[in-house]
Length: 167
Image 1 (cartoon, rainbow, N blue to C red):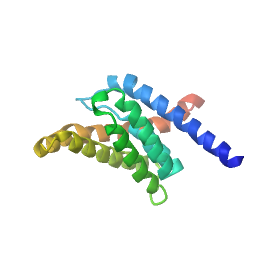
Image 2 (tube, rainbow, N blue to C red; image 1 turned 120 degrees about the vertical axis):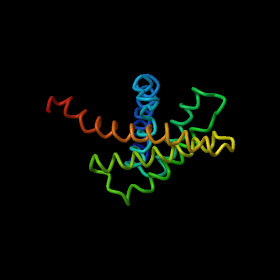
Image 3 (spheres, helix red, strand yellow; image 1 turned 180 degrees about the vertical axis):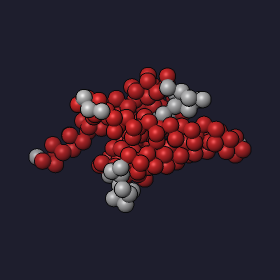
């Protein structure tokens, strides 16, 4: 019975995290554009869940969150599911080998996850136009990864303090 309860708890946690991340991504993050770069909150949610639960949970969470994201662009159905599932798997495996506890480490890991996601996305969408991949990655991909890496650890650090009323 404990294993079933743990599985249901993990499923509930994932559903809540992915749902909130998806709503924030489609509503709030779309308004937070700085020079065309927007934070990728869905990616951050997948990486943070993979950190806590490991590669299987990261893969499943990434796949499900990617399918939700793919629902916004049905002509590319499965693309984000593949990418986010891969990122969840990769960073779920790194959870034992990397120090995640400091905000600086979390920012670095989110930056690396963002770079991985953005590069793979641009390569898969390029259609063989490699020059366009490099320009698009440098102009938008690196900025998106940096924005996500700066914003998410800052919010994760500040949110509990604001809720509790501390500085």
